[in-house]
Image (tube, rainbow, N blue to C red; front, side, top):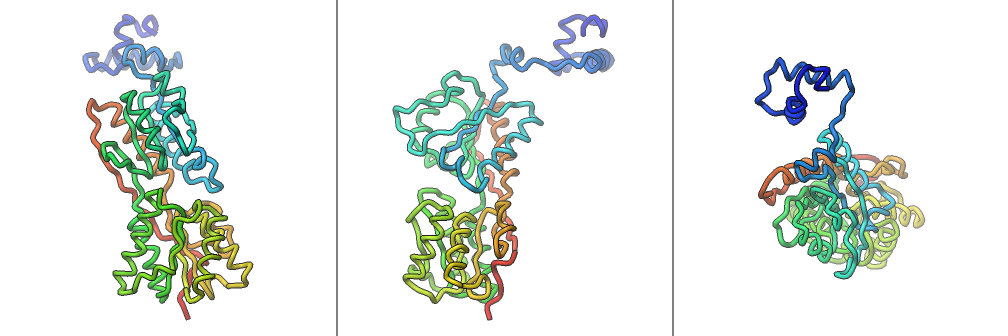
Length: 332
């Protein structure tokens, strides 16, 4: 390249590293040579100088990775798309949901082969404790650790729970159930808080028997069993808000088996908006989480943390959107 551009090797290096001391004329000649020779800078070679690998780790719990609905995998895709623009590589791995102090950390951590790590969903505190020893930038997604000292991208679950319940109230429903899994995951608790806020705002009482909480995982079978338990308590409810769409699919399955019409007899609203929602019978009304955008925001926050000597515990709140389909309607 230096020979083709008629400059020294040192000058080419300065242009590649965007040094401002190079004149525009010389820069143009070097860039033209780079283009003609189809040169791509070596990330590993640059890393020897900058002491950075150009890699970013992405950690998921095994049970989150294997979920039937692609919630966290869509978030991962968002980080991947943004990483390409920012010229980073994403290394994905999973960890056990019950990560113990003696468990081995991911190899890219032990070998210090990443510049920072994105952790999606609630991860074990033992894992966080282990990662902290390596003093790498950490960014959390859809979970905010108790220490509160890390950057995070959060979904506005409280507003989402509020808006979902308000939609049902505006449809004339007053006896509204909330079905959830374990409150161990903060997003489920926050959506429940939004549900209660909407009831209070509308002057409706919170009725404990209308809620089934903390029994099982928030998945299809959990939703099926939760609504079955709900109906063993009461059959007076006219609408159900579920903590996510997977739970809602279990609810729809049970109601269909019991010959209860949706939405004519009971309206159902979910949360997340996964692709399968439009194929359900009826198509599911839900709160849309812009999952890929969450991933984009997480990657940007990570790059900001890598480039900063002292990353701030910045918290980005991503809004959600009501998507009305066929599973809710105005009460007669």
